[in-house]
Image (tube, rainbow, N blue to C red):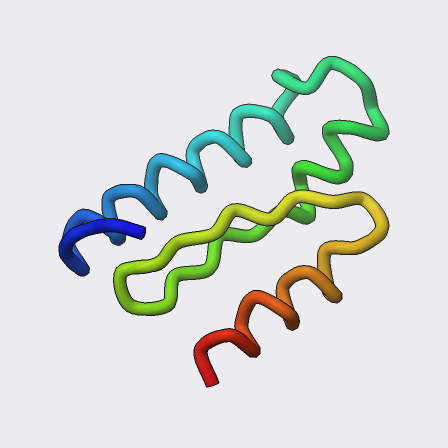
Length: 69
């Protein structure tokens, strides 16, 4: 959780950069890079989540988003 929406947007940008870096070879192993490539950053107001999971991303994302409905 960030103190402001602007800070949350900055955090989301940082987390997206992390996903991009790992997907572009930083994760070393092909399977890991593939999982990172499917990663997402989701911002809900001042809350930010980075979700990168080979098998469970969709379920984790849905559970995260449900917290804000």
